[in-house]
Image 1 (cartoon, rainbow, N blue to C red):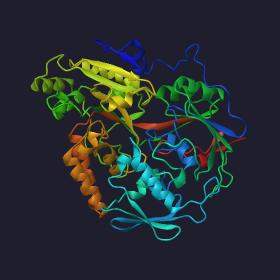
Image 2: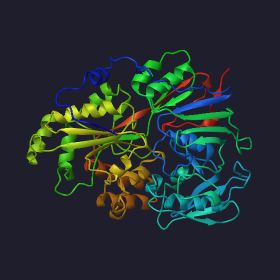
Image 3: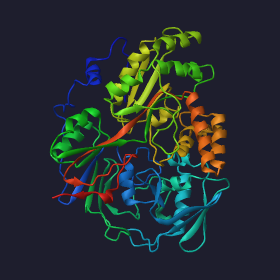
Length: 524
């Protein structure tokens, strides 16, 4: 963990050069070696920027992991390239009553060990996702469905209240044999996916996957996939250029510039669904300045989002126009982040906050998003210009930032955070981020303490509405209410960007920052 003090005058020369785009390609420092050992013949090597602690996704919070996890375990559905559900293990999944969905497993489905897929596995999977402590995906479910068998393959998913996006939600419930499932991230076991795990090291984030020769669908074209955790972006770039890595994800604009144009490297970029935020701590006492929406908005006015997006992040992101990514189905435009430091000072003074009265602590985890440190340093200067000093507290991956986020490790004011949107639709993401209740806050299971009773009422109304058009009207109103509460100082939606060696073919990056491993191949 590293602590930095606020800068009182200007950005450092390093940060300023990077912001202005004249620093050139990312340098590789002496002694910083890239990964060693290239992929063996017939295999592909992936270099991830975040450690993959499990091939089970109960606690998954970064989207690139989905590519690997979905290659081993699968759901009834998955979110397709157009961000709508497509069938996987279910050949039928349809709403048959306001509070009922009917699904049917594909005929003859078996796990990689040859055992059959049973309806009980689906029921157990839902129960394990519900029970796991700190579940990321559980927040998307306003209610958990009950599985009711109809015959050996057909079953219904019953809820007390309508759950109109259940086909989206079930895309993230990965199925495991019931006897082997637990309310935790599984470190072993089998799945129905196109690959099986033949070696794993959770500590280093390294995995070896081999083609499942008995896969129920078209077999993958690549026989073996090696997964590595390479935290330093410069090392991932070196590994890609040297041929030790074939695909690297979530690269910065600087790295994209460095790699673009190389004859054996390709860059793929799409508009993403992840939203990155400088999110306020909503656990502050009622008399704290940040408890007032007017103060939160005033601080936002001091942040030059255009400069951050265009200069610091080199045009690789767009400022958010709502509380969720506008690429999601059902997302609407609610407003924009304005830059007006003079007005910011006036609002703070009207609230009785003089120059230097309000001091903030901004925390984030290294690698939360590309260019994160440069963004934080720029924000320090911008807030300093209106008389609000900011201390930066940076956590290394695997540290105790989760304790801090829950208010158990220490006090903070603003969190640099990314929120993946693996379900493709706005309503479940709104539920996950902004659907916190007083009961959930008792166990610190809300999103940074955000509890808003008007939002909760609108979420209930949206989920209860069976008419699609009327539900969208409520969802749009809900987004505006969240936006007007000023939950974030600034938020942006990054493009999903990856780079790969051209020996790998048919890498089809999707908006969810993932791709189908079964689709890729190897050239000559």
